[in-house]
Image 1 (cartoon, rainbow, N blue to C red):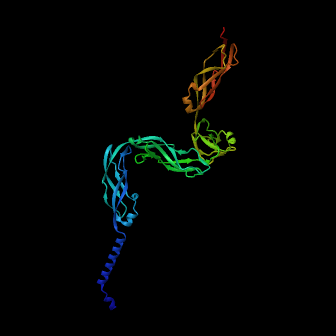
Image 2: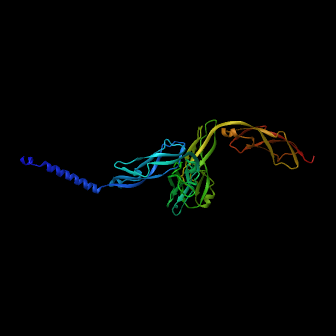
Image 3: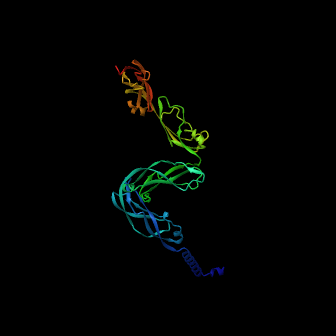
Length: 399
């Protein structure tokens, strides 16, 4: 007990302090404070929706201070440099730079504390999207035309930068592909020199879905897609038009088999009782003796409208198969025709869209009666005509 009391607490405290100092010295030597230079992108926030940046600094250099272990694991993406443009107006505008740094990192110095940008009015253009390829399909395979959705996008940015657009495209890498290529790919926008304009221009959407069919390189043929419908629209409604995207398909096989196939069918689309447009994705059905890629999906729109009826007045009657030696005098030169069909077609129908003909091949000299032959090249149905029978007085030109 007396030995314990004789312990020199002063020496013990001194030893502990020396140990802590030694530990700190070793730690600092192993992980010293350092300064390093980083180049980071500048973000621009809170710009009014109707404005765009026409000219701006894209990066800034920062000198940062931290321990070497922290700096070793630090990247430009961990550092947020931004300028608030909430008060910007047209023309030059200067904004203060702000920096968000990770814990344990301090800003020693910055290349600049402010940025000056040029503000322009925001403009938009629509542009078709091209598909560019790198690599090729595997031996024995070939690619068919790509399907991109959507095929046209909106590009937003300052007018002077939009005027530089030369090419809008997605890049597909087909490297040794032996099956259909499907991907969601970013949109690229370039000027005539091949420089990217994405620093200034925003594509909407920025990612596009692409399908590149990769098929065996045997004889092939492109044929129309015939859409199969099931059922009938509701009473008083009709199918106005059918749109398939794509409208054609590629079939493969022996040449003799290809020669016997003129189109391919889709799986059936049920329109029974429909009163509005029906849109569905469908697949193709196999055709006899040829190969059809049944994995491809086709978007089909069946436009259904209310059926209406109207009378088209003063449709001109024409004679066919006349005899040059005869004169023909019709009891009427025009007729009124009742037609029905989709509302959009009915509203735009003109008498020139209807053909009213009399066949004079069997007419002889005297009074003849002919039955009017009616047809239309539009999406309409002929209901009736008044009159339907027309008298024709035929006389010889010699009299």
